[in-house]
Length: 256
Image (cartoon, rainbow, N blue to C red; front, side):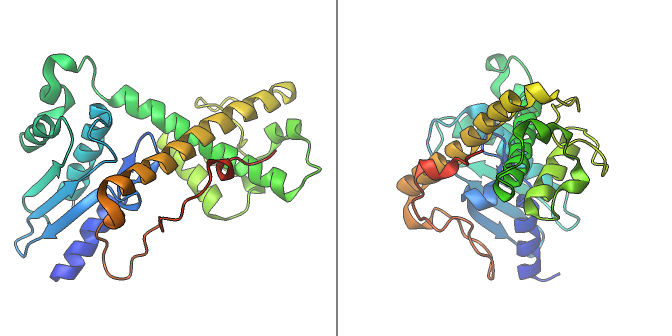
């Protein structure tokens, strides 16, 4: 494996590290400031965030996940992940270097580990993905009765990226992805009665808009903070997902 292949491998590994609140890879969000790979397999990554006061638990979660996925690669030797320009950078970087874990890093300030927080946002991501699939159905068929969405099954969805996103998020929270499974379910896999579907869909839409709106807002903050290079140094052939074009927040909504 040559240097470019190792660098590509490291980038692809980082693609699975998700901002839990925004539900997008840190590579797409431009949170990877730099990536260096040496011939002996040493990897050094610097991360950055939209503000210096982003929640420390989210910041630690992403930095820790980045170190974990890079360490898991077969060819890596030492792996160093550091968070830049954050008010808790020194604490977080020291904890990462020592593999101290979240509670070991923040000590008395960390009342719990991050498993519950991670689970909460995985459930929100599933809800948002479910709403995207159901809204796509309504967009394709304006006569579709909203209350009947509760009877739609996975095999009725098109084979596209939106459906694949939903399946991935179902698996992440332990839900089945069998063809005859209902699309509209809560995090326990429980469906909705027809009269409860419209309200459940509105709540799901609120969750999805919140996630999309926060991602939109954070991209703007990152670009304001770091300028035109805020999409991060990607490998040759990669295309940044964010072109920097301003999108009105109203565009994030989708009519039922």
